[in-house]
Every structure is written in C-alpha cells, then in structure tokens.
Length: 153
Length: 310
Image (cartoon, rainbow over all chains, first blue to last red; front, side):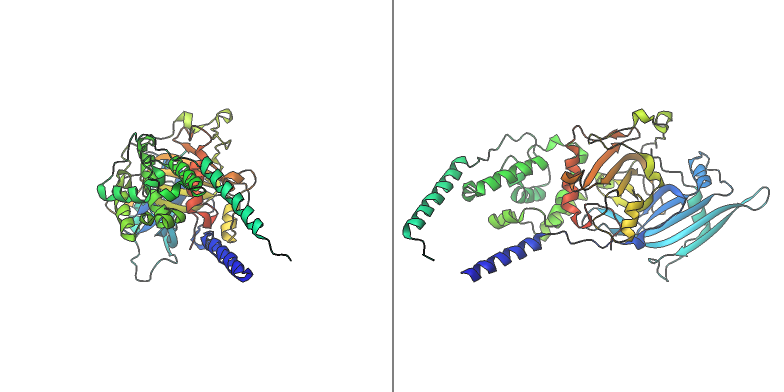
C-alpha cells in the first residue's frame, strides 16, 4: 500500500514537472549589433529577400534623414545592418531578426570643392552564404542616402 | 498499533457524505446570459470554436451532468468566469476590431502552443481537442483578416512643436504610475520585428542591464532591466521588396522589478499611444491584458517577447 502511494506521488510530481513549461530559452547575443554612437534612422523589412534591416547614422546622417530635400552632408556616416528573418519562437504571426547577414558602412566625403563622394564597404555576416550575390554598390548607396528618418516621439 | 474499528470507518463515511452533500448545496450554477453580438466567422471556423472554445468563452456554455457535481462544478464555474473575462464570443463586439483580430491570433497561438483548450477540459470532454488540420483552418483564417495585409497609406505625420518638447509637468504617466521617458533612444537595439496582425513593424530597445543580461545568457532578467518597443505602421512594398515604416503607432515599456511588480510576473507594463503619447487603457486593469498574453506565451524567456534567441 505504502509502495503504491509513493508511486502515485512520484507519478503526480512527474506530471506536474512535465506541465511546467518554463524550460528556458537560449539567448543569442551574437544576433546583437552594437552601432556605437550611431542612432536609429529606420528599420526596413524585405520579404522578397527574407531579410530585415536597421539603418543607423551619426548626427550628420540623421540631419540629412530629417531634411526634406535629403541633402547629403559631408562627414555623414551610415551603417545598414541586415539580418535574416526568422519566425519568432513561441508566437505564430511575427517574423524577427535572426543571424546577421551583412553590415554595410557608408561615409560621405568631400572629394573636391564641388563634389561629394561616397565610401561604401560591404561586410558579410554569419548568415551570408558564399554563393550569394553582393548587392550592387550604386543601388545600395542610393537606397541608404534616400531614407527619411522614421518619425517617433 | 490497533487497527481502526468499524465505527471509525462508519463515522468517516458519514463525515465525507456530509461534506459531499454540503458541497452540492453550495455548488455554483452556470448561467448563460443573453447572446448580444456573436462572432461572425466562416462556418468551418465557427464549428471549431463552438466545439472547443464555447464551453468557457461564450454565453452558450453546455454543462454536462458531471460538470454539475461538486467539486468539479467549482472548477467549471471558475473556468467559465475566467474564460468569459478574457474574451466572450457571445459579446464579441465589446472589443474594437483591432482587438478582435489580435484575440484571434492569440487563440491560434494558444492552440498551437497547447495552452488551450485546457488539458483537464480535454480529458473530460472528448470533443474539446483541436486537430492539426483544424488548426491549419484557423491559421488560414487569421491570415485573411484585414489587418494581415494592412498598409499605412496615410501621409506620415511629423512631430509638431507641441510634440517636440514635452514639458516635465506634462510627462505622460501610465495608470500604474510608469512615466514615459525618451531615454531609450540612447539604448541598444535588441530586435527588429514584422508583426502580422494589425500590420506593424517594431524596433525593440534594451537598456545596458538588459543588453548585458543577454550577453551573459542571464535568465530571468535582473531587476532594473528595461525594454522599450517602438511600433510603426507598414508602408506599401516597393518594387525591390522593401517595406518602410509608416506612422508612429505607440511605444511599449517593460520594467523589471520582481518585488514591485510581483503581481505581473515581475514586470511593469506601460503603453503610450500616438505622437501625443496617450497612456493606454481606461483603468489600471490594462496591465492584466499585457500580463495575460506574456504569461501564456513567453514564460521561457522571462515573459519578454522579441528577445534574440536561438
């Protein structure tokens, strides 16, 4: 009798434990990107490419992004970080950033008295596959410099 | 030791019978108030909801004979009360359309994560299960709701002078006392999301403590950790597939203080709507809405959605 009661109690304990769904998530700090002193200009979703990006900029880049004519500023620095999208764990109906796909740096420099030039650099992230096409430089410069800052309080 | 005699068993039986009878007398009745505005969904969706959800989430609760016997009746009464308080298919129009859609997405998730229907309910009511093919029907349905492909076509409203400088005396404060603060703009980004219901895109900031905790793989998060989620509408996709943020919708705050906010899983919740940053909710009960969903779906990540996880 005592034996069967103890079996019953341990079975109950096991059942309760199995109902405890607080098995802990594995945090992924390698998905974080530290943009240093640069601030948020805006996020960009691309479902055709399955990516999600964050465009950051320094003060001069932000100034351009708030300017109605988007006039480029000498000394503006931009960083576009792109992640592969993945479904959010434990919630059907949201995609979020996963592995870092690429990091693009863009600097606006004064080439001579009248002309501004763009220094563009592409870095592949962990999510970038060797066979993937590198984005076309001129298109990316245009995309990055033509973004207005997202409006938020 | 002397074995208990027959009189012991007899009196025990009498006491138990009295308790049982007493419970039956105080046993609660499940009443069905009138159906005022029933949810309107396609027949194939309706029949799943009726079978698996209506026994707690409607005013058309069908009580089986065994549900009426105490102590089961107390459990049933509790579940029906709780179920109707979360959402009631018979009083569906009490929720604004955007909330209705969010609730439907939550239902799909509750079923997929096997949180609903309740396990005990499924054991007692054989019809209470939702099969994989039925879940697929529900998923297909929510993906056709208007919010799924909602595009923010309105001209983007810029901050005007009154938005730009919020005087300290005018700092918006949530009903639970959490004030708005723009500090988060100096924090790091911890995630970026594309949420399907209601058509929004979000950027999630974490303060230094939050970022450090993620780097140190520290769960649960320490007191002092803060998260702010900034939410925008989505503009139409351009020819290259880019979707850009539209108008600002709201900013959502989570502040970890395991003692102060022990009733809401250790987190203080607040939401500020529109560029005027109007605190969300009519009463302090607004935080229950936040907690209920975070408690059900994110216990494995200390009740925070949108953190970077493998």
